[in-house]
Image (cartoon, rainbow, N blue to C red; front, side, top):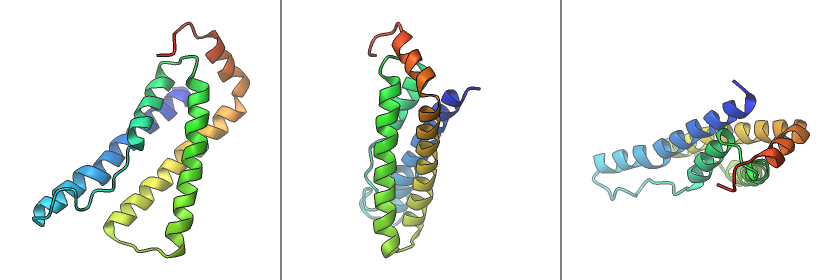
Length: 136
């Protein structure tokens, strides 16, 4: 399996994990406590971008290299910023612990992706340039 394929699958796992800890488990917990179902939900739609990027990595297109680089940089900046704010006064609950662990894995994924894409930039850009597929 190539590193690009590994990263695509890592993104799919992250998306599923995010949906589970930010939506499914909070819905179940709130229902069990007879609270509104969205009471514990941590609204987040990055899982959509993760699925789109994973699909793009597996179905390489002209825009894939740029898409991966932009998402990687933006995700790293966002996660590091969230960590700075959270760790300045952490409030550890089951929800914040799940969020924190998830974000550690998100950070690892995108640092790996950015590093790999920078290291093999020439080859990956060539793949993008030679792609006969359209934008989507």
